[in-house]
Image 1 (cartoon, helix red, strand yellow):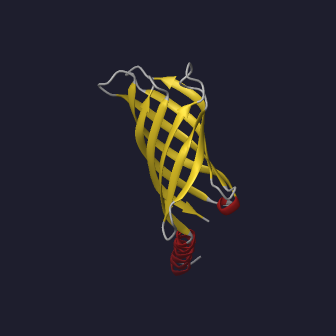
Image 2: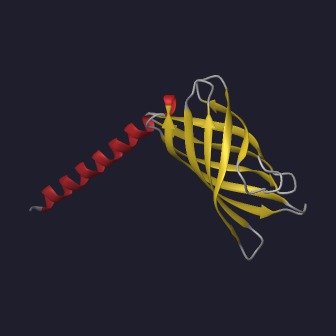
Image 3: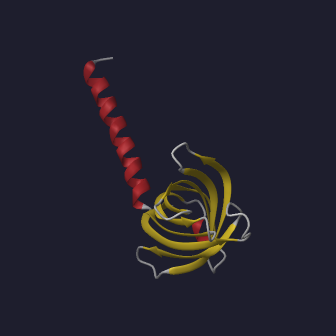
Length: 160
């Protein structure tokens, strides 16, 4: 194959790849979510959590809803951090749901049993208005092991 044809194929492949990414991005909207939740079992801070959330999506009014957090895996690091993987589910009033996997690192603060949360959240499933969505979020907040209460804010994009 001539050098010209190889260069043309490489350029064409690059254009197709960039075009697919542009199409994927065109169906995405920025999202910010504020949430808080409390353990359903006061004696087990790593039990299921129930709470509330408000999602702000570009071009739409704020959407209140409910949320659950179900811890899946917990590891304690040598440095005092807690690595927590959870399943988060957001429930909107219209019946739509958004299921996500949250991989968080809880860093101890100067206040005993209060941890700073930094997390990466990936959408794994949606129903209703969230059917066939994908997306990623970055979250920050606080997890109080003394009270079994967590509050966080996440920002990212949802794509259809």
